[in-house]
View 1 (cartoon, rainbow, N blue to C red):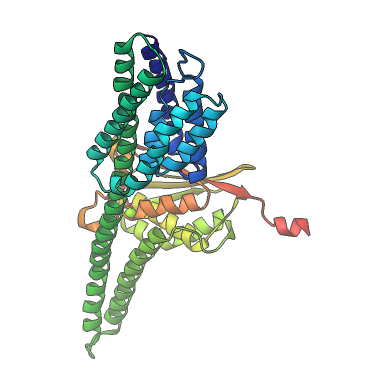
View 2: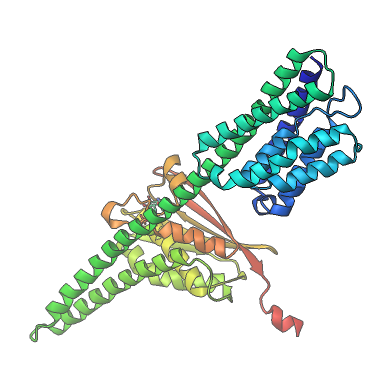
Length: 421
Ligand code: ADP
Ligand code: MG
């Protein structure tokens, strides 16, 4: 049982190291797939194996070096380098008959690796595992052959078991892990790609639908305007309607562009209070239509950095949603607070509110409960703008009671430039 025990200990250590490698893999993927780093790691593994080897007589070392050699040789195409590394490592343990034996066995192996790697990669994943395991077995048999020639070991059953079972088992575990991670990665990439395509497709459909509606309406009014005998007040009314429709088409395009390119274009100093006041002015007619009363409680100061256009777009989307959530009237309160670090904006409505599931989906592209009236782009854009400005959002909502949005933006001190000069 001596060799078996030794090799099992060796295998456990290899598996523990593999486990740590896989844990770090996602985070340091770039570093951990660099060839020099991999050569270093595999040489380290071979060294660990040789260090842990079973030495019945001083010149012979029996261990699991086969595993890193086969895996590194087949999967990474580093066979010849690893064989060289093994011979160098082994030479530190003495220039003896064992080293000669190692060279005889592994020298040709370097050539085998070099020849079969391109073919190996053309095989299917399960065949790759099988080939690696078979190669491990062949090497195991050759090792025992060498053992019988050079070293009188008494318990042959133990030796055969150890070399025919443990290295192939280790190779199977490691190669399976590699194939598994590889397959997972491929699937993830594929998924991201299809998701992206789906998003673009949905976006295209939504955008064309959302733009076509107002444009059709606008062109209808333009047709009516062609009537020479149209009374003046009617003409003015139609023109206002055309303008509204065009503006709503423009807003959809704006949302789409912000989704496609959320980075801020301009970084200017924004006075939160005056920006919000202007946004309220824009939305006042909509609020009146829905009998919504707007209350404000603004702190005296509050400056943040950002893109004015996008800041407005963000709050127009939020306030529009709030107003739309109160079709039978209600109260919309806006409050800003300021401390040294953050400017916070709280938007509270007394509308229909959201369930927990709806709240979780808020900000997902195309998520809307408004049927053909909604685009489901508004909140997605809000989130991306706030994120780009370095801020964050917290939402609380209760069905039939209303919703509260808390926005936090990093505060800046106004006129800092002037102070520094
Ligand atoms: P849309 O307004 O076109 O439906 P949004 O992305 O602006 O798309 O909003 C997504 C969904 O989030 C809305 O359909 C609505 O169900 C919900 N929602 C957003 N704001 C509120 C709010 N203040 N009160 C209740 N529901 C809201
Ligand atoms: Mg909306």
